[in-house]
Image (cartoon, rainbow, N blue to C red; front, side, top):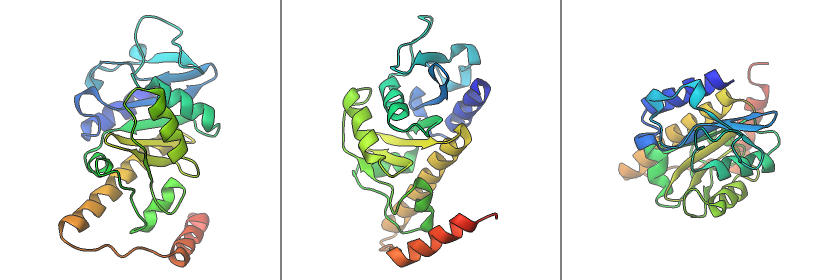
Length: 207
């Protein structure tokens, strides 16, 4: 699992989702969780640099410090027992939208991938704090992804691949939504019936 964590971090960094060593990723482990370290460029990240913490976020080794957002990860694993991975990015379009403290509304059925009829924006709290972790957990009730006000994106998943894919889709949706607004167009929102139909299609997709 740790090898895939390094690969995912490098991939998201190459996409421009983790500027200036921002963002962080983790995976749940039997003892707690393994998370990307603080202050290390992702191009230089190795498996040995990953930090394993207990469920409260306390590192088992003092060789490296965990990401400054370790509280966010610890809180989400405690609040969401189904989550096996947490991906936090500063992807450009979604971060821009988060600075307006606006959700991504149901202009496209793909918002359903996050678990509901929109992708909410958590209330603002300073990065790296317990307040931020709590606000994210609240915004994620009934959801698998949310924006963090004036900050970025967080996504959870039953696997690292699922969390990474969802974080990428949030960026895609934010980019589309902002492009519509920039063109002076008013997005037409899907209504509940249309979203229900799309949800049923998702439920049977691939079967």
